[in-house]
Image (cartoon, rainbow, N blue to C red; front, side, top):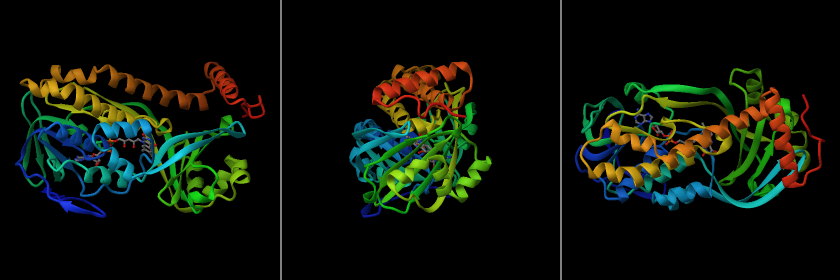
Amino acid sequence: MAAQDTLRSSPGQSARPTDATGDEAEVIVLGAGIAGIAAASALARQGRRVILIAQHERHPPEFRAEKLGEPQMRLFDKMGLGEAARAATTGFDGVWLHRFGRIADRNTRREYGCDYARLVDGLRAALPPTVRIVVGRTDSIETNPSRQTVRLRDGRNLTARLLVVATGLGEEVRRGLGLRKEMVSPAHTLAAGFTLTRPPGDFPFPSLVWTGEQFGDRVSYLTLFPVGGTMRANLYVYRTPSDAWSRDFRLAPEAMLRALMPTLEETFGEIRVDGPVVLRPIDLYRVRDHERDGFVVVGDAFSTSCPITGTGIDKALTDVDRLCHVHMPHWLATPGMGASKLASFYADPVKQARDRSALRVSLDARSIKIETSLRWKLKRVKSATLVRMLYRLPANRFMERR
Ligand SMILES: Cc1cc2nc3c(=O)[nH]c(=O)nc-3n(C[C@H](O)[C@H](O)[C@H](O)COP(=O)(O)OP(=O)(O)OC[C@H]3O[C@@H](n4cnc5c(N)ncnc54)[C@H](O)[C@@H]3O)c2cc1C
């Protein structure tokens, strides 16, 4: 796509012109997903001159995060995007949790359902007008300790003191910058997204989490939650897209759900799927060789976590929060953007703790479901006992079966 300045607009909102201040800025943010938009917003609100490079005028439809909680909303608030995030999502108050054969818990926690593209577009429309959005494809990037240049395919050069790489799962920019991608757990999880025919008002719960019922089913959980007037479903399993299971689920989701969760329909009535099932495999990875002159890497571009844990958005926004509110003010106040200076972001204890815990829960959630070693069997028994005590559930009826 040819690079061009863009008008920022969203359905129901009038387009407003971007602040055309030339091809030079203090910071270029590359990638207009959650992390990139949040970074552009946080920096512009500090009076920084920011160019945000987006691949598309609007985020294309994509099966990504569809549920978030109040902690993530508070991070959006910190970036000046809370109102837009709430407006682009569907709030609901409560989760019913089904474990070991019964509804074990009914909390009233506030959560939000969303269509990812609509959320990203809503956030983008709420950016301060001083953020200059450039829509275009990157041709090449030159980085050094003082000046970063992004050349777009239409030949235009954009320059800044610092480049923030927020290109999510995209490989092109990481590869171009010579970053190494270390696979931590390939095909870690398979996510299935689909919509139910019955609307949210037809169900007695605000939202539902129904955990896998048997040890061998490789199901982490099914969650049902409202997005607008529809009831959305995300099912997380430990399988790969090439498994026969995946083909069967795509072809006959209702029958497969009935077999996996025999009491779901007995409890809540017939479950019918409206439209296609979208399957998406998730790799866990992190980048290496990233401590370099002139740029920092944030969000999914830096590392991924398993969506089962609901940590992806939190991790991306924690990166942006620490980068823009803690480190960048110091960096921009002194000359140079050498690797040793930028290393403070990667060494940030809050970022490191967030990344570590997201990875640990991602790995543990899978192991406790599918590992057969004695260590994980014991952990499974311990965890089941604790859950039973916590929710006062009867023992053993649904204990490990193979
Ligand atoms: C199926 C699935 C379900 C998930 N569910 C959840 C959930 O329930 N809760 C949760 O918290 N997390 C969830 N996640 C994770 C969450 O979606 C991500 O962690 C989060 O969206 C990362 O945001 P990001 O800004 O880093 O990346 P993205 O939002 O992907 O943004 C990257 C942007 O960079 C752009 N880009 C790429 N290459 C270039 C280029 N060369 N030039 C310019 N722009 C470029 C892309 O177009 C995109 O706009 C889920 C993920 C998946 C796959």
